[in-house]
Amino acid sequence: MAHEFCKVEREGALTLITLNRPEVMNAIHAPASEELSAVFDDFQNDPEQWVAIVTGAGDRAFSAGNDLKYQASGGKMSWPKSGFAGLTNRFDLEKPLIAAVNGIAMGGGFEIALACDIIIASEGAIFALPEPRVGLAALAGGLHRLPREIGTKQALGMILTGRRVSAAEGKSLGFVNEVVAPAQLMATAKAWAKQILELSPMSVRASKQAVIRGLAEPSVQAAVENQRNYPAIAAMFRSEDFIEGPQAFAQKRPPQWKGK
Image (cartoon, rainbow, N blue to C red):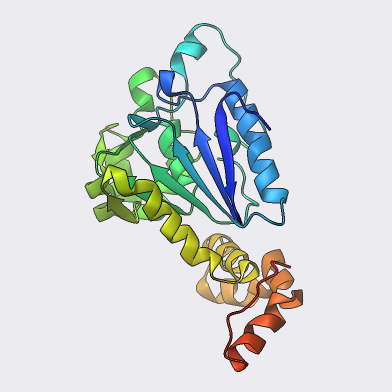
């Protein structure tokens, strides 16, 4: 299927999603968000797709965030229920997402990356939540995800100043997993995806859901006691993979995961 504002490719069980508006540094406007919402719907609902990588077209920007020129021109500013870029409100996505940040990730662009589970950044990547500079606020999850990932004081140090943070500092702060040379970005992101794809997708989804939901529990005790009620964990116990994993281990062979 052809897309106007993004590119979608599939390599086995891996989906590659490229934000494709390089002429505006991959800024996102309402039509792009609607299109991306459908793309992420397809990924979420496709049983054959287990991991996705999100990146930006060109070498200047992952995404400059909200398309302010489009907004200033009177363009529609509503987002789908799934949020900015069809992603930031997608709280029921258990499949892993990797952000391959190839340049500027500002405002909503940074919020897209924060909505992913793993961030791989090129050496020249820049992160910021500069919305207050233009009379806005990072309401697509940035104000809530960043403090949970790096702590309140460090997050407020970025949020209240709108300052730019390098990839190296992002790794030091804890929201970037790995920093690589630009030429190695996609290969590295795919290497992370390959490691995930070696595991049971049912176990991966159960683990992601347990982490995310567990963080919202009032205590570790509550998280441990309630985790068997989480849908992805219940699905893991019912799955063919739950049987296949121990059998493959006992038979000293690679497991043949079904993802169901």
